[in-house]
Image 1 (tube, rainbow, N blue to C red):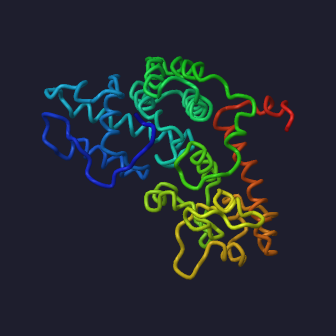
Image 2 (cartoon, one colour):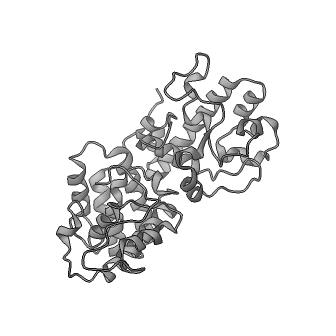
Length: 340
């Protein structure tokens, strides 16, 4: 199952049984077309699973057990391409997820592909509520049965009625718990391996980061394709791999998002920290990296620990707001609960 996402930078196999590998009748061609959308490329085992899901088959089984060698694959591949493409568009445009590597819980992909096969153009309200379901499922729906069983149970809720399908999914996952954002709002992220890591990354990218030199808006898809998790670069040098952070104020924040910005690697001789300190970056760029005035003032006074602490505080506020918005939480309900 899609417990993690993996990516292919090589030809995809297998080709459906009984078909020659051609430009329009192979999983390899489908994978290449999807990769051209700057949203990431799925590995070999993912596309057969999505093909099964689009056609309402049991996607937890080997696809060779669900399709016969004599089946006509061209229409099936075409339907799958359209459904997966629409699912990618939904993730990017409605769910606020810029790349496959940032999908909080990849087990939603078969369901999304089936949904957009059944409903190529669902009503705007259904898209909004489906995005709420995706984020609630990722963040709060964590105490269920084994992943395959849970995924198939949700999959079975999809019907020809888009609105009813989304309502059933939301009923299954339930509303966001009061202050449910708390467990995800303390910046961590030494990579993109966990749900919390990917939540933080999506929250940071929601600010539309700009290049610190040119002010150009950074396109997450291409940059993540090239740099992967390394696109989240440290400002202060982190400890050596495997080593404990050095003692001192703020050292525990060196391996967290408080010390990272989403940015291309700079040319030799330049550093991100140097650009921020030097004041050559236009002031309008700093908010796109959650670099607030208080944090910048501390940095320019040489107070690295103060900078990291203030940036962490700003990130906590932003991540909480991001989670509330993405899950469709009621802000008044959260506000009615006293802070601890």
